Amino acid sequence: MAADGGSFPAALPCAFSPRARQYLALCAQDGRLRIWSTDSRALHQEYVPSAHLSATCTCVAWGPCRATKEGPQRKKRKFDTGHVAEQTDLLALGTASGTVLIYSMVKGDLHCTLDGGHNDGVNCVQWHPEDSLFYSGSDDTHIVEWDLQTGRTRCKWKADRAAVTSLCVSPDGKLLLSAGRSIKMWDLATKEVYRKFTGHCTTVTNLCFATTRPPDSDALYFLSGASHDRLLSVWQVRSDGRDKDSVVSFTLTDEPRHVDLQTSNSKDEAVRLAVVCKDGQLHIFEHFLNGPCKKPLSPVCSLQVSTLRSGDTPLPVPLLTASLCADRQRLLLAYGSHLQPVLETTPINMSERHVCLIRDLNTAHSLSVDTAVSKVKTPIVNDQKSKVLMPGLPGHQAPIRAAPSQSEKRKKGAGTKEMSIEERLEQIELGASGTGGGGERVSTSLQTDGYAVLLVQALESRDAKMMNKILQTKKEYVIRNTIEVRTARLLPFVLALVRAFLTNGCFLLQLPDLVAQLGTLYHAIESRVKVYQQLTRLHGKLYLLMTQVATSKRSQRVEDLDHTARLVYEEGRKS
Image (cartoon, rainbow, N blue to C red):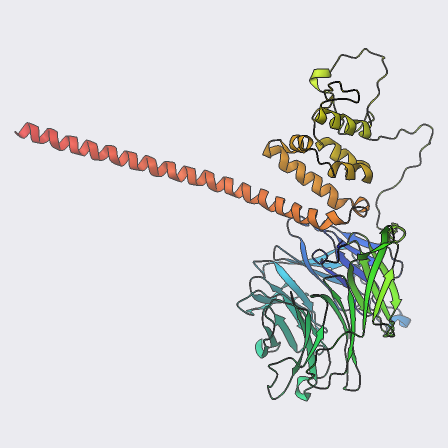
């Protein structure tokens, strides 16, 4: 977290389910999809895509509530006719590899995989409100219209010269907004540009319709937000075509990340929106959309969540996303760690311009997982006869062996006592300094003088104190010996270390600052390892090609010499 007041790490895909806001879908740094229940504040479902480490999730969008038809069809009863239960089911996940995954909450597994439409990463996904249609935008500058009944592309067209970063379908399902650096409004019936809007100098990241009126009444408004821009712009779609400039601007403290909006059906009804910014703050706006407004509007209320961890100094807690409740009087907040967010419903207090919620994350981060989610069964054992395996005891999968210099044959039957992690850390520090407590020379009795094995053991034992002590060491001798290994051994170790960090959610809650950094580090290392393999193959092919070229040139020179010698010999005989 940015304790110094700076911006928080990059936002990860997250979204509340439509209508009742019963669930929160969130993809964390480990690539897993986690669906949290907003009522019980517990983990409802968890899904791990097969390519979650190489093709991470880039965007998330809930589908409209629909009647599920899973399993064999049963005969309808008389009292069931005419009543169809609708519930939240499908969830779309765009990936960096260009595919789109449709996840079904009823199945608890993938509904289908949409591939073949994009040849680059997917940046945005959007559902059609009525038909079984689905839209996706990608870095390949194209928009794809998918048919979910067949799982194939229905239409594909080039949207712009730049990447498509945001999509939004109008409430009536007739218009589509697409954006990169410019905003285009498409007629979905003809796939032609209806309007074009320019005003942002950076990439547009948020698009949302603010009204539900048709465009021929001059009452259709939508808003847009861009990266590195502290303004939300509102645009009016006019029938006379005079809609080149934005009509309203909302001021923010940082670039917008998540926008939730309650639309307006008439000029007498105010539009209310909640905006979560990059700095972790939430801003609430209210405005009547009845024409241009020259002066930028300030929020009617701003909200910040903080926690007391060290002393009495409050530390800001990042807001992941927020949603306005249907009663327009409450807010649904998600804040804290992406691995286990804290869900809270709080009333909207318009009497104060700035509100700070002080929360204790240590008590809020108590794990609460549904029994249906966990597949691990805890056996019933006798406490007196059970044996617990811990780092430093025989049976651990990565024991630290003694160095050859001090290895001695131990007599059979002699009792052995393994060192604890604290003693091994002390041995390493003494080995680095070279002297003991009395000034005598001390030689380390460990396999290495580094922290490689101890790091793995501290991770497996989930000992935050030991991990902090290892990571905060400043001894050059220990750091150098830890990283002085061959590249073939270093890369697998770093990958395993970072993967252990990312997949161990409970342990990471105690080290929130390392989550985003290690996620970025892991993906960078993994991509470079893959590129290294490709470069190795390319190097081999180039070596073979150059060898063949050199061989052909050498044979050509030999043929030229033979031809010259033959001519000289024939001329000598003639003379």
